Length: 621
Image (cartoon, rainbow, N blue to C red; front, side, top):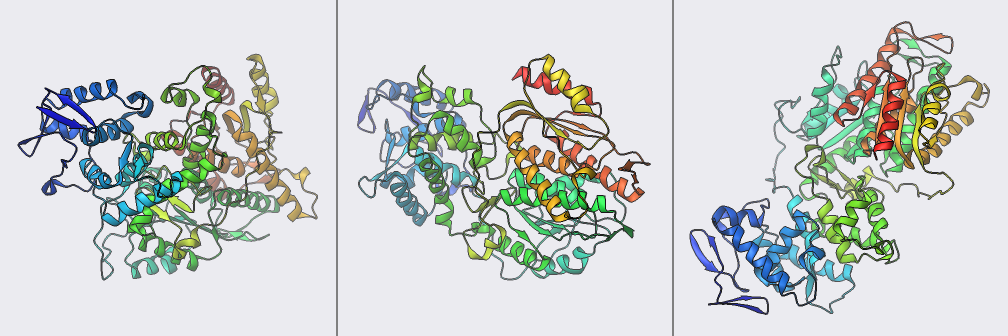
């Protein structure tokens, strides 16, 4: 018996795979395809063999051993397989085509089917065209490469099942959506605002859009978990940061969600001097603190390429358009599948065609807002002593990105891990990607400011972030002496949140712009520090620090928090805070603590213990 595998013959060996109770010989032309058992999502090819054939594992091992010993191009499996996902793709190719990393165009459709993925013919045609363009083959070859195919497989696996189109809006029976996925989470300013009941909810109901309304007459800490679950389930997060409330929690949530790559539509309205909040006139000092906090938030939002709406009407229109196009992510099915490969080509080219292993880490961070360790890349790339100077090919870069994007069934990682506003006009949702190439949803994004790589900011071990206007001299008296004892480097930003001596009483706008600029400059220090120590003391509002902490929690930065609640009789700068103010600023602390706990970030109320924890984190890296 002879079995054909590519151009090789396995003589006197019978390799069988059981499919639908029938044993069929492995050969190049056979399509492993049972139309009656098609499913909408991919299952592991090897798992399928194991399920249908008790000898499947042995057969796959035989095939792998044969191929590794008979490679035509001198490559072994370890040089092209970087983990479970790429190995699965590699085995599928070997089953159908043998020992090749080039997939003939006429075999692409069948190979997808082997992996229980069923793209349309037009999708496959677009994939082939896209692969030619991205690899610069321009029709000179009739194949796609292993790396390109890995990207397409990953994107096909990430596609949700097709939803039935409705000719009329569905009826909304449960606007709270407590036990099911919601289209929109209505976040931001709550009591006494009425924007939800007056405008947002009627408009959403008119369009048949389900929503979760977190506004309640009396807020309690136990509602934090319920609201968190609702945010995780929502496709779009609509946040209104208005001036009728302090919006302390809303600003924290927006910072965290934007950094996490979620699909957020933001509305912001400016504060005014001597305005009232909950019937209380705010002081000049609090006004400056709130304006600073809001401006820092909006600068962070814009740094991720997210547009800030000035009114609720346009934001609701944008939200409806995103959801209307969500079944195809705002693009055709063909564009949806091929967009990821084009993005990878763009970022690869940004390194001048000479990508180094260190560049892979940087590219992954920019594309996904997640971090990789250098040893991970070295392990995957089979590093040698001179590997720092080697070049990573585009094909290998594609395979690496497809492998690293695997989420390991982690619920916190179910976002589109390829999404980043810096390289694409796209934002991710919980199980959706809102493509913004369509003019209908371009309202959500705008070009982010160009990032300048400033080498003048030195790298450090610990960033000393948090309250600086506090009467507690925690940096000079506690943190810095302890850090020096252990021979570590630190960065001291000395945030001046509302310090009176920085405000000359006449040029208020200049003061606010200067404060905002300083914080964004200190962001470079945050980015270049190994561990962030953020201390929120009990004698400052600390909204700027809290917002920055939430943002870097969303970026998965290594962090230690010290959070102290404001006392009921709190005084800041000789001003006694009202009960409502204390409640609002403590609520912000509750939300930040909850986010940190969910991210398994250490939270203390003792500054010394927090500093010691940060030092230990640095020493254990």
